[in-house]
Length: 177
Image: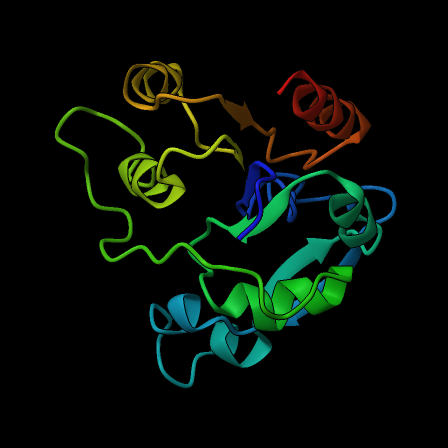
């Protein structure tokens, strides 16, 4: 553990712009993978399972993320599969910390995004940035009210993924701490 702030990474949306269904954004490479969580929800022997899940990743993102003054961690439904399938494809180490989510997609009683409470618990009072495509204003307010140190929640457009503007904001925010 370091004294650097955390950068909590979601895969689908920020790193895999899944919303760009019919076109591949510039710089992205298409991969076919079979993450455990996805595979378990497919019909055994189906064509879809045999083909694998199509994802698009930008191999330059790993170097850009590693150059930022953060301690990186996965905050994704991919959980440990992110270290095996996503990290190597973009140049990240295979042993990043992983936030483990026990109740995937469970409805929150207060309407929060289902990851929010676990992210706060895992950050344990440390400054953090969380990049995800599903963050809402309600989550931002909840974090502001329940986290005693700096936190930035960045909602990423799932049609575009992380772009230069977000990398500049990540650099700027780290300098303000």
